[in-house]
Amino acid sequence: MLKNKLKRYKLILASGSPRRQQFFKDLNLDFEIRLKEIEEVFPPELKAEEITNYLAELKAKAFEGELKANEILITSDTIVWHNNKALGKPKDAQDAFDILKSLSNATHEVITSVCFKTITQKTLLHEITKVTFNNLSDESIRYYIEHYKPFDKAGAYGIQEWIGFVGVLKIEGSYANVMGMPTDKVFEYLNNLD
Image 1 (cartoon, rainbow, N blue to C red):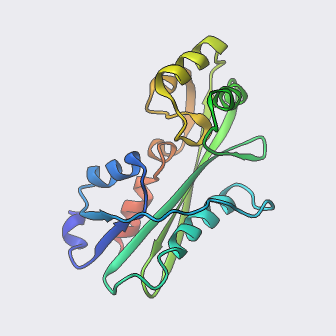
Image 2 (tube, rainbow, N blue to C red):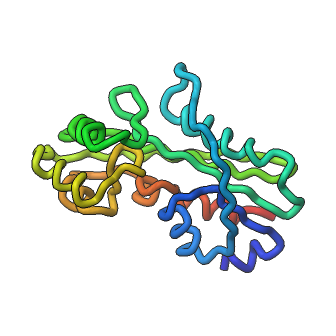
Image 3 (cartoon, rainbow, N blue to C red):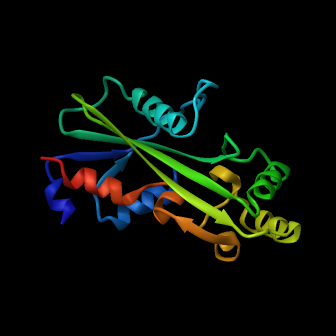
C-alpha cells in the first residue's frame, strides 16, 4: 500500500540499528541504508526531546549536499529520560546495572525523534512513551545484563527482551517507540507525502 505510494521516492535510512531496519522491512518499504560516523554530543542545557531533536538533525546534517531530488533521508535518535537526565547506552556492565537499578520501581520516558530530510525541506517529529518498571531485584538485573548484554541500547534495556517481559509494569504510548522508532508517526508522515 505505502510502497506503491512511495514509488517515485528513494528512502534512505541512516541507522545501523537492527531494530529500526527491521521496522522498515516490517512496514514493507524499499529502503537503502547509508551510515555516517557521528559524534553524538549535545549542548548540556538541552532537555528531553530537545536532545533527540538536536541529535536526529545532527545526523541528517552529515548528509548535507549529498541528497538527490527524489531521496528522503530518515535519521533518528532515542534516549531514556529519567530524573531529569538523559540515559544513553551503558559504558559497561556496572553502568548498565546502575541504570537499570535507577529505573527499578519507577516511571521513565523513552523519547525518539525522527528527522525526514530532502534537498528542499526538513521535518522533525518526536514521540514520548512512559514506561513503568516493577521492582527489579539485583539478581534479575544481573541475569539480564549477563544473558542479553544490552550495551547498544539507550537506558540499558530492550523492552522486547526478557527484562521487558518480566520487569515492565505498564507502558503509556507507543510500544514501537520504546524499541527505537515511532512507526505509526513515520507511516503517517510518509503516507501523507504528495
